[in-house]
Length: 122
Image 1 (cartoon, rainbow, N blue to C red):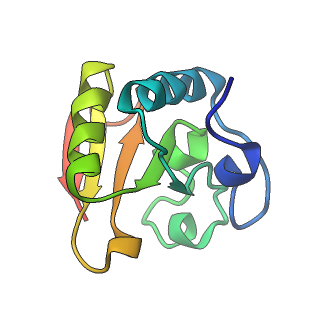
Image 2 (image 1 turned 60 degrees about the vertical axis):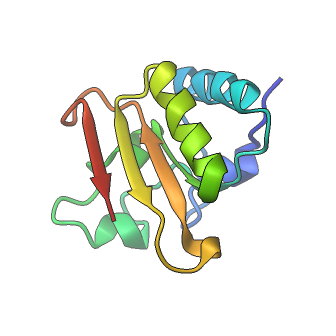
């Protein structure tokens, strides 16, 4: 069973679904451990996605490999998600917990070709 749909993980720019199946299995394990929904605000992104296209090296981010996800979450649930993600081996984490609650998120990724381990804020 998957707690995440293809519709929420596909590229919001072009509609293509290229999400990494191993990473998806790990996200489902983390979701079970959390015991609450993990709403995806961004999954796979093609190199033409506006966020990727604006980068210095478009198409090289973890989202473009299908091994990254942004989870819209804040407060104690964000803290719990971070705890469990680290326990389950996530080594790359981005944190955006400022501004309106609807814009707050935790980025999790499993890109092995990017600096690892890494943590950053937006």
